[in-house]
Length: 429
Length: 145
Image 1 (cartoon, helix red, strand yellow):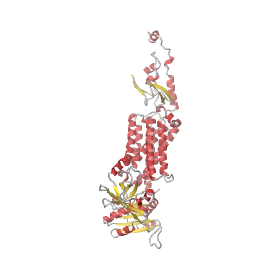
Image 2 (cartoon, rainbow over the protein chains, first blue to last red; image 1 turned 135 degrees about the vertical axis):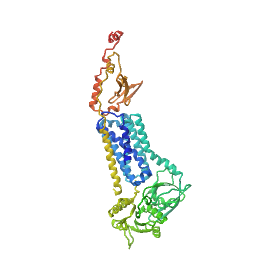
Image 3 (spheres, rainbow over the protein chains, first blue to last red; image 1 turned 120 degrees about the vertical axis):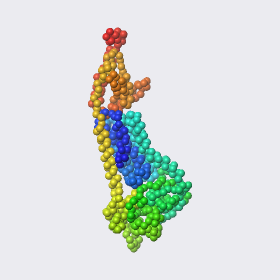
Image 4 (cartoon, rainbow over the protein chains, first blue to last red; image 1 turned 45 degrees about the horizontal axis):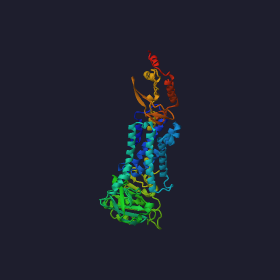
């Protein structure tokens, strides 16, 4: 947070260095400060979304994305506040928004505000606006670049604070440096992925409208991942395509080469996954995420709570533990729509022969005469399972957003310390 | 909001408060207005034609360069600001006529300060108000000979 604050304030610090104009009113200077901080905030958002492991590993990519959403909103609010305060202090500048009168500077500021406002609206109302995920990603990228570039032009062309050559050079360098991570993500990384292609080896149907997609590396040894992590997957097309989706590895992390993902039919892309033919090229950007039993030091006993396709990372963990002949005590609570729709049911039962694994299936619509729990995963259900001989189990929770919130609250209410609850949300947009 | 996000929310509030605090500190730390300096005696003689020759305002204020020009005076360097304090004008500079807008230096000055500057400039005697020396005798008289 301290580093983020320092970087966010960097443009204002540059502006504050001498020479500095004299005798300007407080309100005008406040408006200027909001603008410079807004510029820094916009620029830093590019770094937050660049999937850097150093940024995402300590917190989890979902928290970083949530922080990006909040800081992005703050950036837009600061830029709008800058415009409002500046206009209130000097109403005459509104007339300068006409390019023929005010030149490029004020107009660029207006372009930046419009681009950033539309970016925020299209992100918050994507589904209401009928934007496909891929279209939204492209729009988001374009609007953010336009918003930053226009803001920089505005600062350089309008502000007396950027009238000095070295300050202009530093501000340009700062903005370019902040954009570099996205240039790396969108241009350099795909070029590297192109040299490490995968081929679809197998696409097989599982229960519950779920498909297991197996990939094998082509001409390279493949990647190593920790069980529970995920990757951004492109199937077919180009590695530079924006049509990529995050999927959890579902295969064992201890088996080199072939990797598998579990994909549930939920949207445009996943709805077509069953028709992908073996031999199709694929590119895998990963591994990402901090949701893994391998990253937890004190997981003496575990409680896995999976809902729907949230079983995918849990399967990766269980399969890895199976390969390792793990002897710790594990409990799996698996919420599913119907008993028949529970994916990997037979394999999980088979694992019980090797692992100390208790499985609790919780169907939302149980069959006639179902002997076990059904409906939602409740606090009452979790309370007796959350502890092993009085010690709190380490909980790993993955599933739909609503279920994860509910389970998190229930586990806290059961007395599980926050540090014992691990989760990563995949509703990144 | 999910409980997991509450920590992010708290962090965001802290960051927002810190950034706003920095912005307010920046604005409060502004440099105070300086007293408009009176022109040095030697420069004033030149402005007012005291030596009997005409001098253009643009000699010292050539065009609205960002931070003005600094001229060497016996008492040290003196920076001058661009003259255009409001609106825009067609000015000829270095043989090229172009439209020049008022410089940002003047954008944020209060009306009182702008009026003071204009009053100061208006208070200077324009070269044209002096009798134009037309003959060698006029120059000799002006030189006390």
